[in-house]
Length: 234
Image 1 (cartoon, helix red, strand yellow):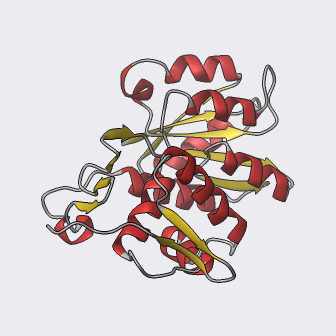
Image 2 (tube, helix red, strand yellow):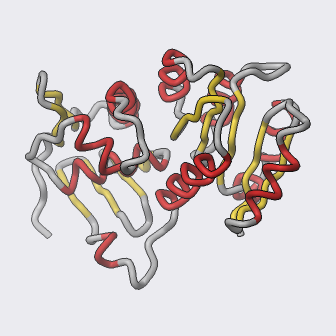
């Protein structure tokens, strides 16, 4: 059973949501304050949590600052609950490293669906997942291992969120081809996702910073993105 941390100061939200989550083999733990949530996430293995849900409007610090704080030490999947579905809230959350967002009020089933999506991204490939993993991908300066979901850039290990890894993996599998923003969104998030193309730009921007000084991802104006590295022979 996956353990999910909810950081939200609404005391009425956690208990019914926890009961609903049990139907999908998800155990929900609620923290009412950011400091409490951060304390629960500390320790080996992200405190035993598999994902976290952050409200934007919180005491002590807002959800954006909390997201930034978590991302300093952890790549745990993060979903942000954004008040009124403000586009700027979504942009800021994604820029800070959130994997997904959901406007309030929300349907519990949609939250579960989005959780299941980000959890699948973080699942290591097992012995029967050879088709999904498709082996190690080697490029000049870049080593990508789908089975371990690990990336090395110029010999150093790079920590990526689930969304960042999946986007890089998608580009690597299609190296030399140009993928449009809509193509990328449909591949990464499925048909339940809004066609929010700005989200792709933000994740690409995060990837570029993490892969510096390697100039790996090129933008083709009005077309999309491509991985511009020479692939090494197996």
